Image (cartoon, rainbow, N blue to C red; front, side, top):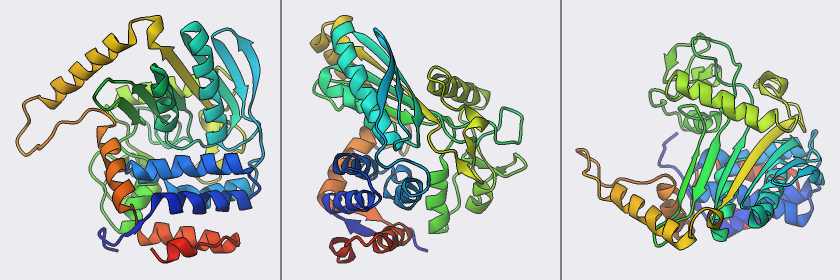
Length: 354
């Protein structure tokens, strides 16, 4: 399949279709819209591994164990520290609720942390950390994940890639939004490469014996390769503990495995918010962030490099282009989406004509 064979789809039409698909699974309209928005926003940033590629998987969850009308609630409140039970809702619902509570509490106290249990897969973490930006706050969000990595020197799926995101507001420049897992890639990205018949870049994956591979099929059956060798494994371990053990959520192999999938309602997340004004005058802070960003932009470039970016900048620029030109979906993604819409009895004519 050619990598260039894509269809451009209007973001609003895509969001509306996904919302109606999720509503057909029993979700209330606000929740269905939020879930759809998280996926489309990922696609708008070019993070297609966490975009509408996930719709068939999420429909399976919503009709097979996840409560489509699950309601998160605060179950422990100790000032700046809260614990939320997601009520077996989709992870996006619980993580969004947690970040809202953290922003609210940080507005009062300057800092707040919320640990979440009773949740499910919550998508790209940048969606939640970035919620803090309009409030002149710094946001952090992390989550546990199914085991797909081995401990350093091992060849068995023991650790999740347990991603983390930080969002830092700037003044005149685009905000810094870091969002990454502690592996060279994710299973979602590898699935995209497999769909397109492409070889993987080196450093993304290991085969089932722990040997480096660029074959997407072998990678799906194998292991994700940690970034930074033992350092990436260590950071994945730390984020997994923060995401699960503070709230009582499942950790690592307790969550499930790639063959059987996760046990519904056992995921955990952790979010942290800092109100800049509790530490420093916000405008001065953001002006200094602007300066740091401009220093990076002005850095002498290595041969063949046209521009030096800060974390999240490429995604924010891609969003502008994709809002204008449409989100590119490959034939497998688009075909799966239309198939699920048909199965759910949802009119997808707006996309069929794309």
